[in-house]
Every structure is written in C-alpha cells, then in structure tokens.
Length: 290
Image (cartoon, rainbow, N blue to C red; front, side, top):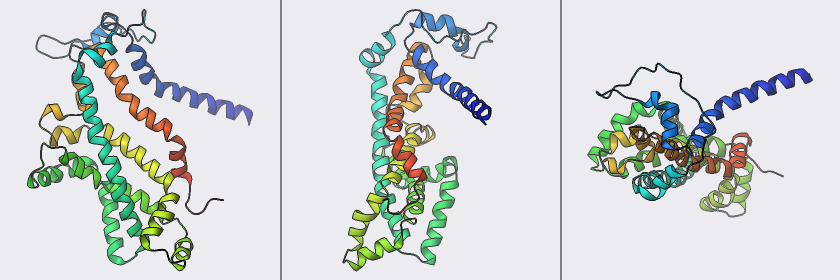
C-alpha cells in the first residue's frame, strides 16, 4: 500500500513538473537580457528575408537560470512603452464587465429556472445546454451578423453582449440552485418572504461558492479570448493583450517573456484568491451546512 502511494505521488510530481515547466521558463527568462535570450533561442525565432521561418540546425539551449538578472524587459514594458499596458487595460475593460454582468443575469435566470417549473421553461433550459455545448467558433458568424445588425460592430459592446448573455453561468447556477432543498424556500414563504427576499437572503448566500467558482472560470475563459476580438474588432487599438501577445515575438523576443509574465499574473491571483471557493463550488451539493 505504501509503495503504491509512493509511486502515485512520484507520477503526479512528474506531471506537475511538466505542466509547470513552461510557466517557470517564461518567468525566469523574463529576467534575461535580450542578448542572452537571442543566444539561447535565436534559432527558434529567426526568420528568412522573405519572412519565413528558418530551419533549426542547432540545438536550442533551454535555460532556466539567467547568467545575470536583468529588469530591462520590465522597465521597457512598464515605463518606456505604454503600448503594452494599454493592451493590458483593454483586456481588463473587456473582461471585468462580462464577469460582473454575466453573473447578475445568470443569477436571476437560474432562480427563475429553479423556482418556476414548466414544459416551456424546460425547453428553454435545454436550448441553453445545447448552446453551451457548441464551441464559440460555431456561433461566431451569427454573433457577427447580429452585431452588424445592431450597429455595434467594432465597439466593445460586440464583445460584452455575447459574453454577458453566455449560457454557461446560467446552466451552472441553475444546477446548483436546484440542489437547495425546496423546504427551505417554502419555510421562507410561510414566514411571509417574497420572491426577492428568498432570492437575496437564501439563494445568493447558499450559492456563494458556486458564484465564485463560475466567476473564476468566466474570467479565465474571457481573459484568454482571441477569436472574438479578432473578428468583431477591426481596430487593433481595441484588441486585448491576448491578441497582442502573438505579435510581440517579431523582433522583440525578450519583451515577449516579460509581457507574458505580466499577462499571467491576474489569472493566477484570481485562482489563488478563490481556490477555496472553487473547490467548495464544485464539491458542495447544496443545502444548509451545519
């Protein structure tokens, strides 16, 4: 038994190292000077005169510890070139309203699906599930056509509206709310509580873990979005940092590591702050905890 546990632990540790290696490599290489990065990975990023990639004939030197720690990349990103921070704030402006208002819309919709049953509502809820199972690329063309019809194409609303009314949060919160014992809500009704009071004082406190879990998943999903801004926003000045990252590698290899590190900070902080809520939202089955 002890040997089996030790083997499983070793295998899990190996997989953990493999998964964390790209993150560690990005962070440590962000403190390298541009010359050192070019000497280690120059063959990877080298291009021909026509813009094509060159053949890598030499081994790439995968290096985790810089010869000399340099903050020049961060100084350039944070102080000398405001373009990167501007793209960072584009990401924040696009993502935060989606997280906040999607939770608000989904909470009300989930309460309606939970409290009021009927064939029509079950059909609508089934449609929500179908839409949730479809990849975003399938609905991208309809979203483009609707945005053009509403005359919001090339504006932030073209990103906000589809995100706010996404079915993912509605599905998750509905399944969670339906686990709350009906007797709790019935007791509140007997005491004279209205629907708003039941929603505000019973459902929302009991769904705190689920709300935090869904908020984390929504934030990470939209923080990494690429297709939506590329198709719905033609102005590069409005693109988030997730789109801009792919363009930094062209002649600015060192900056790519620094910007990627800064880009990873918000999702990591959100996950670390809400880790307990995420676990609770996934494992808790609903009801009253003693």
